[in-house]
Length: 258
Image (cartoon, rainbow, N blue to C red):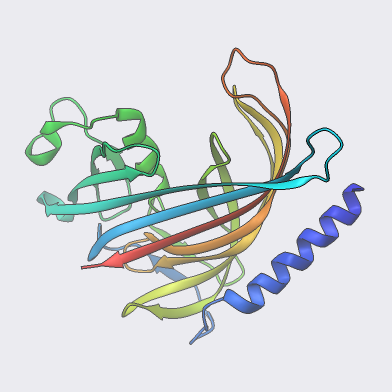
């Protein structure tokens, strides 16, 4: 399909999706608003789901749609420490594995989050089962610093997708206004991404569009849904040959509360 036609179809899908799924904005932003004054909230668990699908031809048969789904859920246990910071223990269950991954991190009221490190005390002294997973989670949980959001400004949010290897991208988001989710005040954001993704397993152009909801008090990303595509090449491991990659993508994040 020509690139222009593909982009038009994607834009139409995103527009229809936004009309159907955007949370109702209860108040438009009329002035800049500071986000993040508390390190953590009553968050019990967060799940992310990624689904990708593409058409695959086998011999002379009609191409079949091949779908793959990936889901992970993380449970939280938090303990207050000095300076308003929180020690957070994250237990992440990945659908493909029966053993949860334990990550421990420290999140301060200004949003700076880091994994457990040598010399830490309390729960952090027990360390993380996978320092790399802890590092990724610390960067993905929400905003990474206290900041003032302008009604006409742009907010950059990281996004981690499984398609099928882990891909980290950046969403460019614009505030639609305020709303309420589980009795928490949130920003409703319209987000999009159009960027080249490059790693030892993926080299492709990723296009995404959708909505994100960010908790105003903590800066934690509470929910989101994105649709889009990834077109380029991939390989199953750094030693294998490159193969064409042409996926449609659906992503969702949800949060449960205590």
